[in-house]
Every structure is written in structure tokens, then in C-alpha cells.
Length: 625
Image (tube, rainbow, N blue to C red):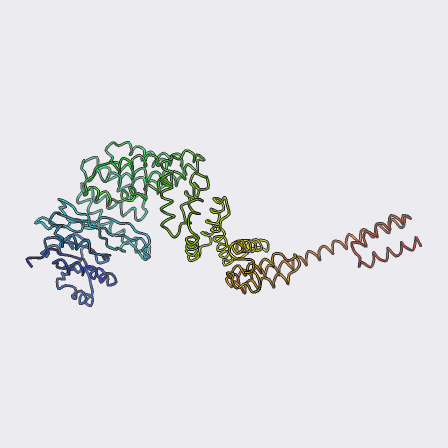
């Protein structure tokens, strides 16, 4: 096909659940850009091969030999387009429009290669991920080929590089079991070890090994890969290697941190930062990981030092001139890419604050960084429906008075607070409620309906939580919090008339609180009234039914305890009375009738129904008649 612009090639291995998504996402691209699709079959069933034929008739069988580059080259050899693009069968594009525009506009004629982002997910929910620039599009030349048994790439990559703002979803790093994850790691490590033997001067392989060990939290593996890369940096001075410096130094810092070698890690990080060949991004990465690991080791003095270093180098990094290709590489290198973002800077600034809080020196926190946290806080509060789930450091800065946290929170509308409460309720996490409750109490300096609204729903959540093993007094404390929180809010929002009759205008929990208040106001021994009030409360607000049952059970136990205590008191009193009567008889035998009579009268007041004491009293009265 003489006008063929693009060849798209995939390795297909039988992933039926994702291959269809992948190929379907490519349809708009193939419909608008003269294209061909080549599938390299590395192990599909016959039935699945038939399904694939509906997408293309170019399906190349390939016997798997633990070499991704060979498999990719099998498809590349058949390519007839000016440009070549490859991807995996567990990836699919969100929107190919930016890629379509690159070709349809003719812009592709001005470039020799292009990159787009792959979104690598860490969980099946798609809530945790990292975006990586990947070199998957290249202008075909006579020497274009794939290299690498694993983490293969197209080489030579030369000329101008276009950054295309498109991304593909990739769930290939989400594993169902630890065994599956370990098997994937072992396979890749085995192939990388072979590559490092075959190409001892290729820096890509220890860099990829670093990534594998990082994903598994393998401290020793990180150190070994980092040391290998650092040795290569000494042997050959090259631009790509210089961009990788931060990854190797940071990898060793992380490895030493995982092995709990805090002192050695600190020494290594400090000496690494002294290397004048480090670009600012490498220094940022080194100080970023050193700061986080020092904080984990509670070495807060050193944490402060590395945080300050990070911020200084971050400023230099912003001023460094880099071409687009170098910037793309930098934003894709493991460890470095996550340490040089605006989000990473904000994390470091928060860590700096946390370390100073731990040292009791929060007043040393620089004004510039304080303003940056304030800016981050405002973005968080303004744009996030979960604004009460702030980082701990922000709460502490607000509590310390260095951030106007209460002012920012109370600047939000009641409707925003209501939405946040709904989010919290949906999570059903008692510890989260407790954490936010304690933070709000610490930062709160005045009354506000927003606080009252939160407290009402917090108290309602407390009513829904388990009550296993809680005492009668503890349950009454919870009930008191429920009553006060609900009625405080209700009295602020509703008129006194709303509390009359059946109170239908009040929220269910507020009606329940009115009845629960009657329970709390009852006398200690008025058990039946307490139980009746609780029954009405549970009827109004069924979610507190379990709590009411628990409290009713404890009321029964309290009744028994008080009855037992009263019985014990009566027994003790009877024993005391017996001893006193014996003393009275002794006084009577000695003729001391007046003294004996006075004692008997006091005893009669304590035990008016005691027959023995009454007989003694009558006997003494006869002495005076």
C-alpha cells in the first residue's frame, strides 16, 4: 500500500478480557489514518485466533522464547508504514484523537519519534497509578529494530521527539496474588540478569532492574542494581547516564532504608549530594528519598536538613534549561519522575513541617513554604469533596496556629460540609470519624453551624458502631454525646414549635435525641422510665437499635448490681446493728440507761423496721416510766 502511513503491531498472548478493549480503542486511529495492523501471536487458542481475524488478516505465529525483542521484531519485519507503533494487549487508549491529529495534520513529517503516556495502575479500582512517558512511535529507518529480552525498546531513537498528549490504560502490574506478582518479578529479573551479562555497558538494564526491585520492596536488590549503575556512571560520561544519576543514588538510599541501615543511608545520601555532576533533578530525587527515610527513622534533625536541600535544588531545577527529549526522559526515569513533581514538592514541605513539629521548633518553618502549604490547602479545600481528610501535617500546622486552617474550613458553605459528611458516611470507617472529630476539636475556637452539623452526624455514626464490651457509664457517655450534638444542631436550625407533638419536621436522629434526653434525665433507679425512653428513641432512629439493645442490657446489669449492693449494705448494717445492740445491753447491765437509750434511738432511725432494736427501745422506755 503506497500511501500507508502507520503500522501498528501488538503481541497477543490470549488475554481475551483486554485484547478486545485494546483493538477497539485503535479503531478510530485506523479509520482516519492510513494504517495496517499486525498481530504477533505468542500463544493464543484457535478459538481466539478466529476472533482476532475480524480485526486483521496479518497474524504472525511466534513460538515464545523468553525474548520480547525477538517477538516484536517478528512484527516489525512485516511493517510497511512510514511510522511504526507498538503496544501490549493489556493496554487500551482512553482517546486516540491526539495521535490522529499528529498524523492527519501532517505534523508527523516534522518529527522522527513520538511518545505518549501509559497509565500504570496499582489496583483494580484504578485509584492508584503513575503515568510514564513511553517511546512507542517511531519513523521507520533501515536500521530500526527492537532490543531487550524484557522492557524492550525501539532503537536507534534519534531526531526530534514529539510529546503526544494521549494516554493508555495499563493494568499489567496489578496482580491477583503475591505468588503471581513474585512469578512476574522472577521472570523479569532472570531476563534482565542475562541482558546485563550480554551488554555490561548498557545502563538501561540496571535501571530496569532498579524498577523491578522497587516494585517488590527488595532492599538488597535495589542496592545491587544501584551499585552497578553507579559504577557505570563512573566508567562513561553520557547525557543519558547523567539523567539517571538520581535513580541510582535514590535506589541505594531506598534499599538501605528498607534494610533499616539509617546511619549508612544518611552517610551515603550526604556524600551523593556532594557530587557536582548531579543535575538538580538528581539532587532533588536524592534529598527527597533521604528525607522520607530519615523521617521513618525518627531522625527529624536530618529530615529537616534534607527537606531544605530538596527545596533549594527544586528551585534550581525549575531554572535548568532542557530540551523536550531530555525532559521526557527525566519524567520517565524510575524514582526520579515521582520526586520532581509539584505534588512531591508539597509532600516534602509537609514533611519539613512535620519534622519541625516533632522537634518542637515549628516557628522555624520558613514563611515561603508556609505560604506554599496554604496554597495547597486552598486548592485541596476548594477542589476536593473530601476536604476534612487533610494530611496530618496540615492539621498540626492549623492547631499550632501557623496556618489559618479554621478560617479556610469555615469559608466553605454548609452545603459543602453536608457533601463531605455524606462522603464520610459512605466510607463507614469509625477511626476516620474519630480522627477528624479530634482534629476539629483541637482547631476549633468558636461556635459554628458547620461544626454542629458535623458533630450531629458524627454522633449518629457513633450510635451505629459496635458496642461490644462497653460499660454502662461509657454507653451513657455516648448517648449524652448523641443527645447534645443532635439537639444543639436542631435548636439552631428549627423553631421551638418543631419540638412539639410528634416533631415530624425534625430529622429522625433529632427526634430520637429528644427521647434519649428523657432517659439521661431520669433518676438512677428509675429503670422503667429509662427503658421506655430508649425504646421511643430507637423507634424514631432505627440505626441506633443495636446501641439501645446494648444499653438496655447494661441497664439490666446495673439494676442487678445496685440490688446486690443494696443487699450487701443491708447485711453490713444488720451486722453493725448486732454489735451496737450488744454494746447497749452492756450499758444497761451497768445501769447506764440514758446512754443506752440515746444509742438505741439513733439505731432505730437507721433501722426503723428492726424488731430487736424496737424491743430494746421499749425495754428502756419502761425504765423511765
